[in-house]
Image 1 (cartoon, rainbow, N blue to C red):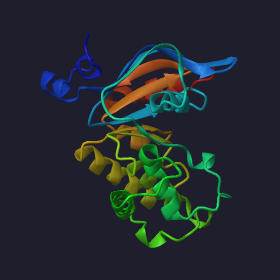
Image 2 (image 1 turned 180 degrees about the horizontal axis):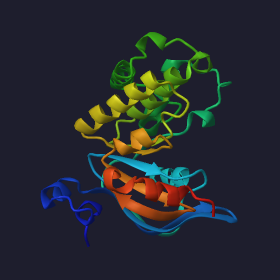
Image 3 (image 1 turned 180 degrees about the vertical axis):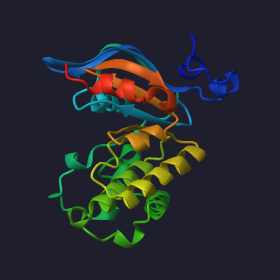
Image 4 (image 1 turned 120 degrees about the vertical axis):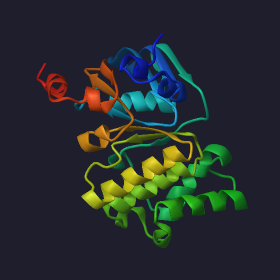
Length: 246
């Protein structure tokens, strides 16, 4: 079977490097009484940024949830070739009212290994320090999460994802509502992470971010409407078809 990169005319050498990090076959998923995804067949290439693009309700967040393991498929197969994923949900799904400092928020990323009630080790603390430093939020450590600007808050949540030390980072709308400077900072970070050996998947409405990705999955009404390189996939005609009223 050809990979998405071979079908788009990329060289065999590139296709060999970009081996699948995640593969799903005839994958369906949803919620009680509400199916969302319908028999998806696609691959997420390793060591690359993949953008999930589609209108609201197209299934982007559900697909991320399935890959993260928080939503179970109703049928089909999902195969991971690596660590347990780190999942960063939309900012709106994390309550501002929670009395958490920035450091406590990032420390929660270690719970996947330690559990919520065990004391963090010195190595855990070093991992948290490194994640905060990388996101440029060390000076915000004692600030309440609800006091932060949108960009600061998003960086704290991404730092929490980095603290999980996974080779697969799943992001749900990481730049929505952020100013251009904050968006550029996060985009640069994601490129650095891929260079460091992390596979990144982000659901996004930001077509600029999607076009700068290495791969793209187009979703419409829970079905796969296209997959390939953004330059070839995100054309005016294709986007008009995806966003046209049903």
